[in-house]
Length: 174
Image (cartoon, rainbow, N blue to C red; front, side, top):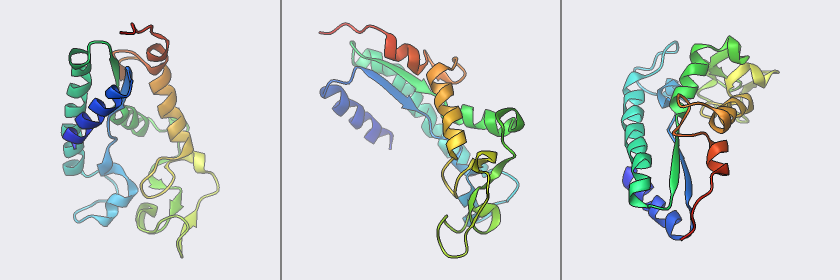
């Protein structure tokens, strides 16, 4: 997958991309659909999946750190979505969440088995209380918090600068 990202970076650079943002993958071992996997526990994340994600994210971060060397007139940022997500999950009430485990819409344990909209699904009345909208996707409230962190955040959320700074820097055109 990292080879594909590298190939994609080459392609977007070829067509003129000079401000590049890459975001880490979130903790996939924590999504409600994880209950479909063997050895999954309802009350905890699957470490073996999250460890694979962390390895992949390290490769992404290395790639971002090398963009300036590979493309001398480009600049890049690395959004730490994994960290942002885990901070929200560790402090749900401070972000306005009542539930960071179960999906707002779906069916089965954690609403992680049935997709929203399929026969037998359940939907809660206040989606903003939930970190997850469905068995896989964050809620609109979650996406808003993540986007605010990436736009205005510090180095524990996005580095070496946030998206607002990246958008406002002057790049030399060659």
